[in-house]
Every structure is written in C-alpha cells, then in structure tokens.
Figure 1 (cartoon, helix red, strand yellow):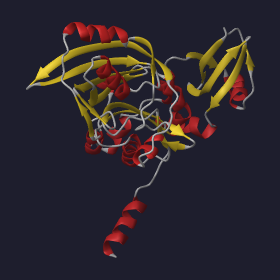
Figure 2 (tube, helix red, strand yellow):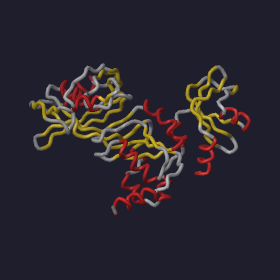
Figure 3 (cartoon, one colour):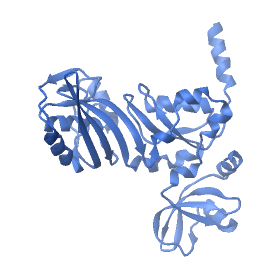
Figure 4 (cartoon, one colour):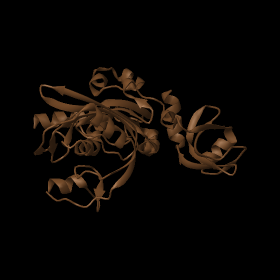
Length: 320
C-alpha cells in the first residue's frame, strides 16, 4: 500500500499547465512516437500535446512535438517532405522488411557500382509502392500491423509517391554487404519498402537495418533536443526549448491586422483587403503582436481557417 500511496501523491504533485509551442525532439530508438511525446509532455507538465506524424520504434530522429495551441497546426506538417539516412542489409529478406522480423530468404550478393547506379536512377522520381503489412496504415479501421501479427495478409492499394533525391553507397565489411541510403521523399513513402524493392531490383533481396530521420518540413536534426537532455535540464531550461507556435507556419505568408479587424477575424468574420490569393496565410494582430490563426485569401477576402482562442493568445503572450 505504501508504494501505491506514494505514486498517487507523486501524480498529484505534477501540476499540469498551459504551454504553447513546439519542441523539436530527436526521438530515440525503441520508443514509439506517442511514448516519446508522453514523456516530453510529462517533463514539461503540459496540458495538451500532439506530434506531426509518427516514426517507427526502430527509427530515430526528427520528431516535432506540438503543445497547446500548436496542436491546431500539427496536421500541416503531415504533408511535409522528409529526409532519411538508412542502411539496407543486402542478401537477406525478413518477414517485416526490417531487423525485427524472422529471416525469410538468403541469397548471394553479386552487386557492383554500375548496378547501384542503375537502381539509384530507377528509384528516383515518381514511383509506386505497396504499403507494408507491418505499418500503421489502417484497413477497415484497424492498423495493418494488427492483421500482420495475427498472420493475416490483406490486400493493399499501391500508392504513388515521389523520391525527390536518392543517394546509394555500397559498403562491404567482414563479408556483409549493405547499402547506405540517403532519401528525400514525399509524404507516405515507406523507406522499408524502398529498401526491399531496391534489394529485389539488385537480385539479392534486402531488409532495413537502420533508419534515422534527419529532416522534416525544413526542421533539421541539428536543431533537435534529446529526451535525455530534457530530463537533465532545469524546468526553466526545458521551457526555453519551446519554439513559438508560428514556427509551424514558416511557409505561410504573414498578414497583420489592426485591432478592430483582428477582433472580427477572431470571431470568424472574413475581412476585405488588397491581398493576393493565397492558400496559406498566418494572421497576426498588430498591437500586441500575436498570432491569431491561419487563413486563406480568395478574391480579396481573408477567410479564417484555424483560430487561436483569446485565452490561448493571452497565454502565448505571457509565455513570451
């Protein structure tokens, strides 16, 4: 009973608070994106949190975490291009396409620089992928990996994705051949599937043995903080890792409204002005300077999309 009451007291002592902004996390191996998010949320004592698209437990790297008002804009980054460093082990295929799966086949590796150049060109640009069974993609409301764990294979629709840039470097050490891959790709691309398909194109098969996301939507690995570093920081230093909500809107055109128009815009009312048509606008109030929300401009009208509440605006201003 003693431990239980101690735990309850500990939970009661963690006072949640409203924090608004984004933390760029270098997600460690072994944790799901949600586990990493919950740990960061606990460390920051945040009331509300979300992330901008998942990374597998076997992948590490850039994971933008959104807190408070920033969660309203997290969906915008699901469409972002991403860059990965990956390693594909040649000659061995597995049931999952990665190092966690059971070995399915083993073939000799007869690969030279010319073959690597050929597949590099073959898999650059628009390609078609069949999503892997071991993925979070849903079929009839259930993730594919749940079917896979039950030994059920379901039909998956092939999808069009774009590999914007692909660099392949062949390595051989102690008789083991691997491809070191740098991939810049569109949303919905599966690096595990890419590694498998490249292995088949080389005639030897392959599986993914390492994956690290080094960039997403312009956010770089060098700008990230680890959970370990966050744990060791003081509470005030943790809050210094929080970037303003508008960091998520870097590709939006800024528009600033005077007080009367700002108030009406926050009430969901369209405003008229000499603005050019634009699908992505970040709207600010002038005095005080504060993010009000996002909008789009059509035919000279500023049309609200996602709005911050007056309380969220007040709290973000207090946070600065």
